[in-house]
Amino acid sequence: MSADARAVKRGAAATALLLMAVLLGWVVVAAPATQQKAGAAAAPSSKAEYVGTDTCKTCHEDQFKSFEISAHYRTLLDRRGGPAHQGCEACHGPGSEHVNSGGQTPVPFDFAKLSARAISERCLDCHRTGHEQMNFFASQHARNAVTCTDCHSIHHAGENKFLLVKDQPQLCFTCHREVQPSFRMPFHHRVLEGMVRCTDCHNPHGTFFPKQLRTAAAGDQVCFTCHVDKQGPFVFEHEPVKTEGCTACHTPHGSPNPHLLRVANVNQLCLQCHTVSSFSGAPGTPSFHNQAAKYQACTLCHTQIHGSNVNQFFFQ
Image (cartoon, rainbow, N blue to C red):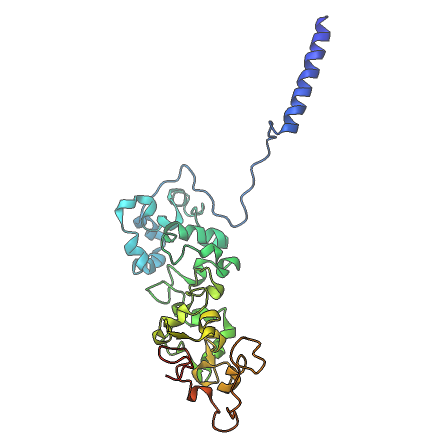
């Protein structure tokens, strides 16, 4: 076989092998690196070095003054973590290139220019360890692009304990305006009075339950934090308390009715289940109960309606 024929044969074999490799996935075609998403944090340059908080405050004096009196400042003085965990650069990244350029080169983490996801990830570098924040990315806040700095401010906090932008409940009402009027009802949880906080019942950083409640599956554990006498267990349980939770009968924020009941007339509430047809499985109202006269409110007799240890009809 001539040299030219052998060359042609080798070329055909190589082409066939390459085609087979592509079909089997052996060859990965190189592609341009994915560009950084808009608003994502820029990776610190390998040349950037940590310069220390004293250097930062030379230009950013106002920011440093507010930072100096915050809880973050005391935490970030810890020398055991090294420069990457100390002072301004613990959040903003190494600042040597920013300093050397006279401020022309931005710091690696300029929070004003970051996406909501990038800001949350940066904060959670430190705050992910506690159970309070561990479910944040599964929360309704995160799903709606609410990030840490929408509620917390390192430099301009309205209150010092949690570095909130403003005090509760006004901070929560910034977005949750639909619940604000409920707390002005004749009967309400005393949130506006400062005796109860939104975060007593809800975890703004996320839970596994609806409404980000700090509760059990039945929705009542958060209520029993204060209303311990209603928790039980009881010898005779009122089933809706265990199966549907407190909100089957009560509205949690406020109501025009005493005891935060969903309806004005107690009997109307009870008769939603205790009907003659007994569709709910609950016993119907006895025929001798005159709803218009003596028995105008079931709880006049059934006083222990949340549960009783001595009487199956909740009389006592």
